[in-house]
Image (tube, rainbow, N blue to C red):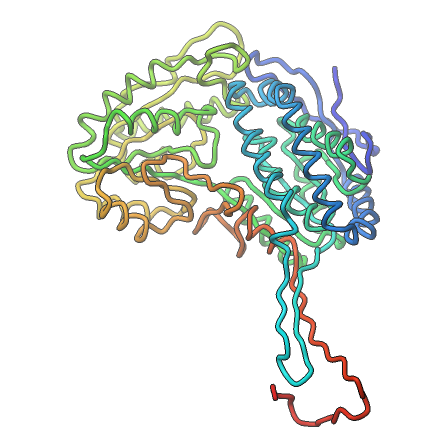
Length: 496
């Protein structure tokens, strides 16, 4: 049985960890490895290594930092297939989906390659007689990331490339369900020339998380996960005096207007709802049909979803793999059962999907006539379940979305520009797509939701990520040629 270790100060290490957790192959249902679970001492070792490394890395030139990012970007491209196989084996997603995740993570590295441009300060000449003023941004110190299982490459890369490129050091606590990708990235960083201790990986459970949140030498924490845990992370880290950005859960709606191209909308909704078995924080889990759109759309959704090839993600032509654990499969099936019991119409029931073997499979599900009081609507199912809610008007659709406690992503399918413009302004959600079902911004923008989908003041990666991982310093300077001839005043200085 392979044991997956931590990565601290440039080397794989057990760090005196004795507890382990199983790492499953979701396609077979068999354990393929075990991962060490860190105690507080292991976290302290990682933070101490990062703190020592910060003493020099924080003073490394922008050019040298950018060179490391350029080298990392090339290595990620070179090892894309190997990384995709690692993700597929531990997460279960289709191999092409894993490659797409790597590409989107690599885009943040590309943003970090140009970090010198976004770290430019400002300068004002002669703000007062003989006085100049300039500002610049400096790194915080040791930063930490706590990331979920559903994107073992992309979500951590929303964090650590920006943090490291801006001069910080980093401790990553990835999900213990699919830990190997993070260790692989740690080795790539080393191969790219990153000094030991700048990037560290500790595997673990709540014990490791709490140790990070409480550690006095951790300056900032980034988190992505469920809303209850995001709230917990935000409150505990903030009470310890840290900067914190905590991205929570989602209930992403896609509105389909009667004037939309329904074939196009059905294609896009199928991909957005069932890609990665619905285990995406930006997955569309609710289709809100306006007027009579549902009568034409639902049969097309059923046909497209039932035609998906469900199987092991490593097999050619597979559209959708298993979910991550047997517990996840049973929980999702429970929500489908609850929805049917509460009055939803099972147009396509994923519980009926059968495949030989012990993998954690459940088929695509389409539930029609779902209402906002049903559990399957209220809760984040995080599986291949698409709920169809019928609304009479676009106003009712917007009200439905705005009443939902989540505000991560939303979309509208329409051919009417005025309706789209109204929707994008009135809907209270952080990321909006127009005829785009999963509106994940490019790396030079920032990712983040509203309401219970985000705790903290800043979104992640892009310009807001730079602001999160740095702090502003403003310098007022005067260089008089005759210092003793400059009058000292007791009253508050003014520009003159």
